[in-house]
Amino acid sequence: MAATPKATRPPSTSAPPSPMTKSERSLAPDIARGAMLLFIALANVPLHLSGHSVDQYGYFADASAPDRIALFVEQLLVAERSRPMFAILYGFGFAVMASRMSARGMGAKGVRKVLRRRSWWLIAFGFAHACLLFFGDILAPYGATGLIALGFVHLSDKALRRWLLISTAYVTVVGIPVFTLAYGPGSGPPVPVGLPAYADQLLTGAIGAIGATVAAVVLAIFVPLVIVGMMLQRSGWIDHPERHLPKLRRVFVSGMAVNVLSSLPIALVALEAWRPSEALYRVAVGVTLLGGMYAGLGYICGFALLAHRRRSRGRRGVPGAAAALGERSLTSYLLQSVIMAPLLAVWGLGFGEGMGYLAAFGVAAAAWAATIAFAVALDRAGRRGPFEAVLRRLTYGSARSG
Image 1: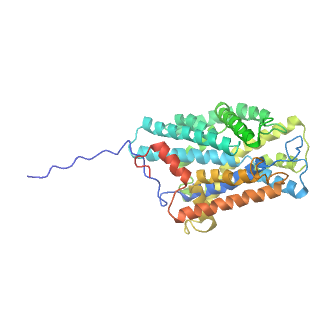
Image 2: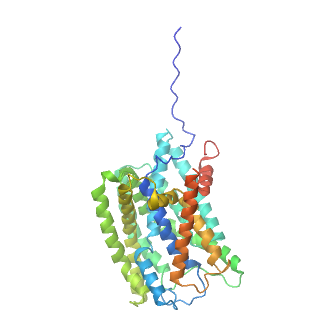
Image 3: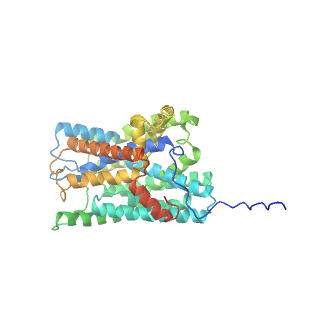
C-alpha cells in the first residue's frame, strides 16, 4: 500500500519569528543606531548638570570660551538630530517586525496586536526610566507614536505617501509651532520645591514622561519620521544601499547642507555671537526642529553609504563595534542613564555640579565608549542585550521567545 502523503502544514500564526541572525541583519541601520546613541548621550548630558545660572536662552551664563565652542559644535551638528534619527530607525524596525510576522503567515490583526503590546511595554519602560533615572526619556513618546503607527503598517505605498504629506503638514503648521511655545528661552524640566533630591527626580520624571508622551500624541512630531522609516524599509534603501547609491548620496549631501543651515542660528546663540529677541529665538528653534527632521534622514543615508563601503569587511573595526552597539540599542540607551545619572545628578554623586559643557561632553563620549565595550563583549559571547531579551519576552510571551 502506498504511503499517504503528509498534509502540508501552514505557517504558524502564533509562534513569533526567531530572533534575527547576524547574517540576516542589515549593517546600515545597526551602524546608524550605534552612532545615534552617541548623539543622544551628547544631547542629554547637559540635563544632568547643576549649579549654574542660565541666560535668557537657557544656556549656562558662566560658560567659558572652550565650553561655548564645544556647545556651538554640539548645537550645530547634534542637537535635535538624535530624535529624528531615532524616530526614523524606530519606524524602520517597526516595519521589519511587521514584515517578518507577515512572512510567517500571521494575519494583519495578529501583527497589530503584537506591535501594540510592544508599544505599550515601551511606554512602561520609558516611564520607569524617566522616574528612576532621567526625566528626558524618549522611549515612552516613541511607544505612544508606535500606537499611532499601527494604522500605517498595512497601508499601500500610495496611502503611506499620502499620510506622510498629511502628517508633515500637520507637524509643520501645528506641531512644531506649539512645541516652540513650550520650548522657549530658559525652558527646562519642572523642578518641585522642598522635596529631597531623589524625590524631586521621581516626581520630575513622572511629570516629564507624561507630558512628553501626551505631546507626542497630540503634536504628532514623530509620526512623519516613523512613516519615513517604514518607507525606507519597503524601498530597501538601507537594506540594500548598493541598489540606491545615487539617491543616498543626494539625500546625504542635501541633508548635511540643511543640517548646518537650519541649526546655525541656534548655534550662534549658544556661542553668544547672536542675541535675538524672544520671538526670533522661537522662530530659530522651529527652523532647527524642522531642518532636523531632514537632517536625521541625511545622517542615516550617510551611514548606509558607509555600510556599503564596509561591505567587504563586514562587522569589524570601529563601524563593526558601532553596529554591535546598534544591535543592542535599547540596552545601550538605558545603560547611558545608568552611567551618567548617578554620576552627575544632584541625587547621585553630584559630579555634575558646576561642570561645564566641554567636560560634560567628554563624560558623554566616555559613557558611549563604555556601552560599546559592553555591546562588543555581548556580541563576542553571542548574547543579545538584556533589555532587548526582556522586551522580546514581554512582547511575544515565553513561547519560543528565546
